[in-house]
Length: 349
Image (cartoon, rainbow, N blue to C red; front, side, top):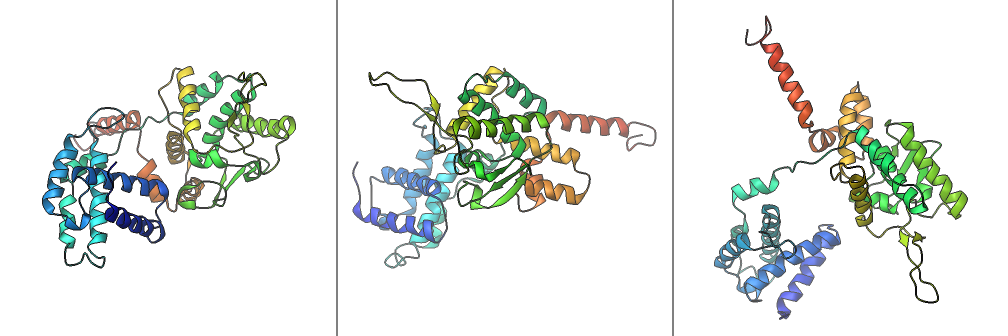
């Protein structure tokens, strides 16, 4: 790949700015790098300092027609929007750097703004499949438990609904973070990969002792049968080994945490397939808990405690991000109000 050395030096400085001043993680910086690379490909690696607004306009037209490398389908509005916003932020930063202030203006960066209609589509919330507690019980009941790996996977699903932990956090939880006697998970950001590196305690949600028993049995097995100590992972990654002849031996529990949440998502996908249920994602369990909280909490203090248990700073986060009513409940409520409005003394009587 042809490289523009001057551009590479600028990108290196910008990524350092994003990392140190803006406090962005490596995943976010990788997305910015991808956006810049797309633009450089469009301009044939022309110097950023030679930027003209016509380049932004033609790039936007090309991006709207571009197909994704993996799916072969047209880039989504969300991808297009995030790419353009990343480029706008970069050129805003560049316009303030020494040597570029006379060549670039802040308004030049505005040419990367996406169309308002595209922005609206990109920001539209996606419909998420959210399971009921009965469906989650079906998932757990149909999961095999013949091997240690099977029991790990089953405990993983039960743990997710009991604690509402995010999949990245779950992948990095260790035995010492779980207090079965107090029914508490301490999400310590020094070791647990929590969102925004936040440390907080979570007490088990009141979803049923059957789920708690599965988690408790798994903890006991790890300590009793596998000799795991406090620093060992709660959900060890799968480990493969080879015999002296080079044959692959039976898969077994490893001694390290998963590096990311991809294996957890595979466990959920397989559990849903076995139970003949929709493909519920791990994060959908948090929506299940948010909806349950709206039903069982009777006072503002109770709902505040429920919200904090999910790791939210305020109840508005729980209400606005997770509190969307399921379609069937929305239908029942609207139809119920319509019925009341036609009754004697109602609004339409």
